[in-house]
Length: 397
Image 1: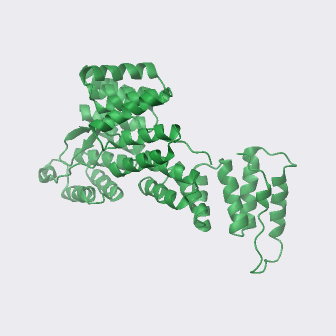
Image 2 (image 1 turned 45 degrees about the vertical axis):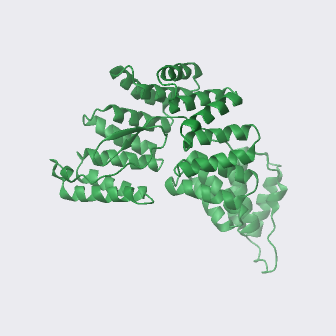
Image 3 (image 1 turned 135 degrees about the vertical axis):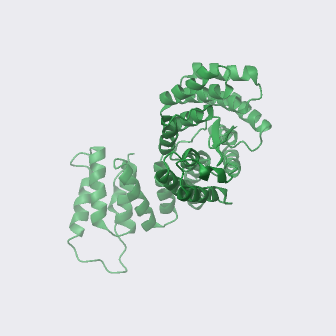
């Protein structure tokens, strides 16, 4: 299957603490905040003791050596259900959603705070960031511009606007915001990364490499810059250097899904399925419905000959998108050749024919007819290898 590497723009995002403070940081995915229990919060009007206890359970989940974001979401969600005015619980809920890659849910949580009159610069930036991560660049821009209206010299809002306009492929406006930041702060890492991304979009790879290395020079563990540098190496056919850079990005920020997907895609390209599999699984552990990670995991399972598991994950991906011809063909071949289930194979081949709009005389139609006839035949003996008629069909996707 064809692979797409994931670049990483630079956003100044909100890190939320249990005591309600904000801390800007130069990473797209926020680092785990320093979480502190806040006993006085339990005395706040409208916050029950039960909600306060749930809140502390969420805090404990975030403070763990390996943060359990699913548990944190469950606890903070229960706390806000019990006490809807529990602002700090809403903040931590939004943060935990972000860590799981559930940006739409995160945006809803931030908006819930805004709807109740909680107006804060950091909250507005965080809402814009979540909107941008859902692909809604226009709404994100509207939020970032609110910050500039209140504070015209806000560099974080300018960096975020640059990121949003990069997402919209409006390089002229993005470059304007980048220059405005660098004119005031020449060593601003977010602006440097965004400038590198602009060069990357223009295929000026030498300049892009220079910018990302410059950012790493100021912060050697900047996961964004390391990920984007890996893309430059990949584009210049320096594959070992790309793999190293992506792995360094993962070491710097284990939640950086883009770096995991990028290195896993390279492993798949070079048929190193065993190395690709844990990377896709790590993404799905945080974001179970991540479509690309789901298909990648299924491909890796297929490559490691875990056929039943591969078919199961492919089937799961089809519940999200049932018109991917590559997946339909691959899972059909799995059922036919490796799992010996001709009826299921025929069903997926039929859908494949529909999606590809294959003519009535296409060889795949004959394969379907053969498989349907097999359903009416006695079972094959144990020492009889299954027939893979789909291998005769040309994979045109």
